Amino acid sequence: MKQQGAGTVLSYQKASVFIVTLVLAFITYWGGIAEAYTRWNTQEEYSHGFLIPLVSLYILWEKKDLILSSVSRPMWSGYFLILLSLLVYILGELSALFILIQYSFVLTLVGLSMIFLGKASRYTLAPILLLLFAIPLPYVIEVVLTAKLQLVSSWLGVQVIRLFDIPVYLEGNIIDLGVYKLQVVEACSGLRYLFPLMSLGFIAAYFYRASFWKKAVVFLATIPITILMNSFRIGVIGVLVDNWGIAQAEGFLHDFEGWIIFMACAGLLALLIWLMEKLTTGYSFADVFGVEQYNKTKPIFYENNASSSGNLIIFSLTVLTLLSSYGVTHYIDNRQEIIPEHNALVNFPMQLEEWTGYQMPLDDRVESKLAMTDYLLANYQNKQKQTVNFYVAYYETQRKGESPHSPRVCIPGGGWEIAAFDRIEANGHPANRVIIKKGTQEQLVYYWFQGHGRIVANEYINKWYLLQDSIIKNRTDGSLVRMVTMVADNETVAQAEQRILSFMQVAEPKLKQYIAE
Image (cartoon, rainbow, N blue to C red; front, side, top):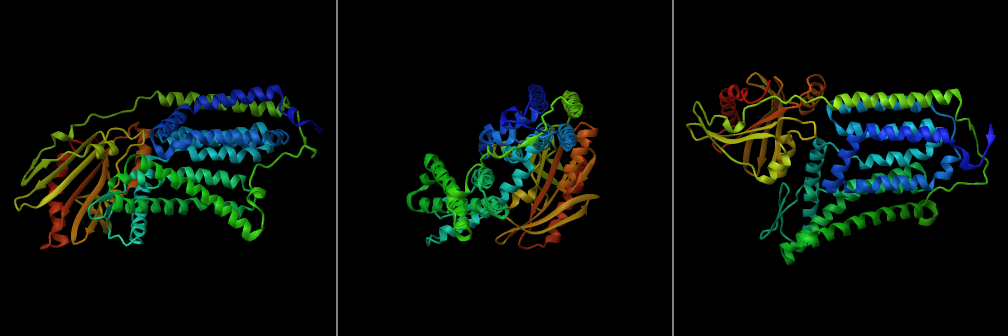
């Protein structure tokens, strides 16, 4: 063992191998990195992603002396972590789940740090894990989270409006002020605050020199702060619109209000740290917030034999493993996904025995949001003039994240309340049976997921089958099928159910011709 200055820890050989493996990692994971960049560039919820790597690099630079002075022999656990991360990566490539690829990249960086820096990785772990906050959520999770936050923010926003004695009525995500109606759209759900503020909370907790429970409080507090402040913003906009017109909810003023609220959220985080210290230790904000400094007077001992046989083995294995994984995934990427032919749903018959239908187009904005390949939306009437709404959304590929949205997510946004939900057998296959209500109105909804010769009711089991088929069959096509009928004032739910079942018996045999087996 030998004492050295902080700057001489990494030999040129070790540094060179580290740079090579880092470049290999970036080349291997380039597809996942590029997808994250695209979503940072196109979705405001993730626009903070551009800053996260810069903050990570800044923290690493500030700690460079502490890191370099603590370098030790390679940790084999880092190599096994890389093996695990590359298995996740290959699974992500096979299934085209970018979140698996991106999480795997972060794990690989942690593994490389453990191999080349050894015990000094304890100082690089937090900056590397910070990159997790730059990873966009899968679309299916984002849609569910957005819908939930929309409902919560709408309800809390209405409570703020009522504090000003303004009469207001809430119907789903629509705030009715009488003269004006405000819709709390996806962009106002709060996700645009939540992800950046959680990132900021993690950074603040990292720089906060305090016990773990205080750091945890700071980070977790970002969630309620985001929801409450976003709801407050919605409420304030409602008050402004009621007094000064709809212009208060549009254009520059709307965006400016958003920036003010985000800055207020950041201020509340700082206030929380100040309050906790005031109530517990009495320290000032400046005393407990900052980067841990390297103590140059403290002797550090480490092993500085970068060329030993043990080091050579683990470095060589790391390079070979990354090269092998790149070769495997390059082969996977070059596989041509099988996209089966299907009959266009516009040709679906509008006469099904006694049922006569007419097609209806979706709103362009809704169609763009759902991002399906093909769809059918039609109302069918029987001889008694009773209507069943029939909707089929077909996706020829779900590799890029687009997938059918579960009606359970979309229903509450229209002001409907789910009164009952069951999974049943209908017409010889599983289906979801939902009773929804809005005021005195009542509707019965049946829906399921169909494709690859199977019908599945559970959306999560459907995702599992999709993952299997993407690997084994190299196919990710699939459909959502939904039927809706109104429960009239003079009939029971059982009568409405018979109507849907009657329509299913004539529609499903025809539908098989339009959804690939």
